[in-house]
Length: 462
Image (spheres, rainbow, N blue to C red):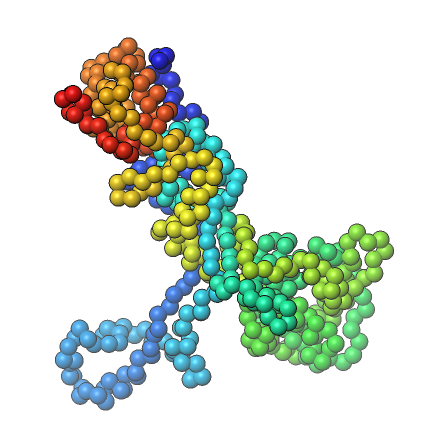
């Protein structure tokens, strides 16, 4: 057995793994990163009920009377003049604050393949044992290292029209997933129409006629034109589809106001002189199309190949924060928050992946699962030579010790570069490389306990 330099770095390329995944003991872990879904945080609102007017309380008890039990008293404290919430008669409070129904999908996080391959490479170089839960937490902390698997809850079934039952719809351009086919088509029309058509602005003639009013969107400030103008409905639909599709069309119509100011009418006429046309990209002398004509061509020629229908899709986790489907985005956020507390689905995906990549899983203590590139198996101290037997017996008697504690226990007071220390580190490295000793991610050492355990005192009696 060749001696080694005690200052030689035993674990190669460990720094990449530590920097990327930040593996440290639980008590020394840094605070988790900010919630990547904070911009789409789910706001859970309690079911609030409006308080009765103050005159009802005065009618119920004489002036100056105090409630029998102050702890059960409801309503604002004395001196609190904040107005109680008001609700319309058409919509009761229970309905106003009712949470939306959950999306009918199953969502799980899985590791991204290239990131997982780099991690396994670093683990082989480090030759240590790592807790699977910690690895899963580090993946969840970096959405670029995760994929999201979205699957319809009910199994696909064959319907009379020949189409499968509960389905999902994915845009192939940006991999966004939708619960509704119409929402997927509207998304593709609004976000990817300019990838097929070149948008150009040309000057035209001002609209002819006598106009007495003009409609205006209060939220965006854009002028839509007179309600009796032929382009009014087309511009209203385009603005609603591009910016306010999260609302119902009736709700958006209620935001439209009418102005009779001559200056507003003249401004609309000037804007109407600038017309927007669409020309197909890559086509020589392509005809100029109106928005409605471009949408019709896009719907018939492009949409069938851009929207895919399926029962399950896997997509990068990073892009899901900007999806248009509120139900799916909310479901993914809730799953991420639940997995951040206990990464069940990600751990379930990591276990078979580690086995496929020739790693070994084992449990210690209270059932914590670890993964290591070396297959652990016990070695009886009685079947070894003296230097190896001394290390094994010490680790049997002091499980969880570090290298420094092992050296101090076997060679107290020895200099770091002395032959006595080398005589301890050389057999330790041999035992780790062959799985007879496990070195954990935090530097602690332990002996595998599979099979009959040989205690040092038993060996001494022999």
